[in-house]
Image (cartoon, rainbow, N blue to C red; front, side, top):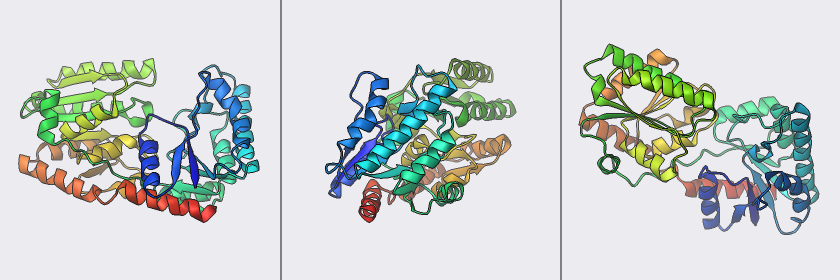
Length: 361
């Protein structure tokens, strides 16, 4: 069985899934976009796919962002790209290749086509199977598109961090006794970074004597100059409360992100809207306590170190609760979180996804 995943992304999900499937005897790799021109890559997809007949069994689509071409501005051009996307799906069908879609996001965070909902509807219609990470998203896809061939396969909470708390803090130069709050990953409006910083700021104003013990790490690439300006403004005001702020407004490696999570005492995820988050999974793989806004699609991740909140006031209370934990309480919480995450591994994901492929071939 040969499977091609589309597209290759910085998110390590695809690499981990390829490795897991390979261990279960599946020839799994990427549908590579090898041309230096993004436009030519997209224009060539339908023609390349016609030659997959007899050599490729499944094309597994994860995201559609390669169709968001930098030069495209008008609605008509984005509509043309949506039709070209449909033509690609038709070419896969003509080549007798099965299509699988994993719903990492119900809709893209950043618009791709003129009508992303209609593009999703088309994708679901052509797909032989759809993977959702949770029951809520599966029901939503079913209700929205009438799809019945939906499989719920939660992502792995791994690889579990091999860097312990003290080693990570020593490596990053974090002072003993300093309480670290992390806001990591792509800095985008939907992630609620501003809300996370306001929570810490309000807590510091209410606890001025404790504020100097806190260090906030904000690391990740902003999606726009406006987002960058907003974060820098709030970070500057945070420093006025006595809190130490470390800003790395640039793309950070997966290794550095894992290091920061291992060193952190808490991580914020006050999403405005979300289906799934690789950053959240990375934090949980490090056993880091997380403060997460209430979203039904994330309920499957609830554990002892998962603090679900409905507003900034509850987030501040959760922060206060985590801050007040004694050292032994923090250690026990981290161990409990890692124990909870341990069975949620990539071997299990690979096994379930292989069974899904076999069921549609």
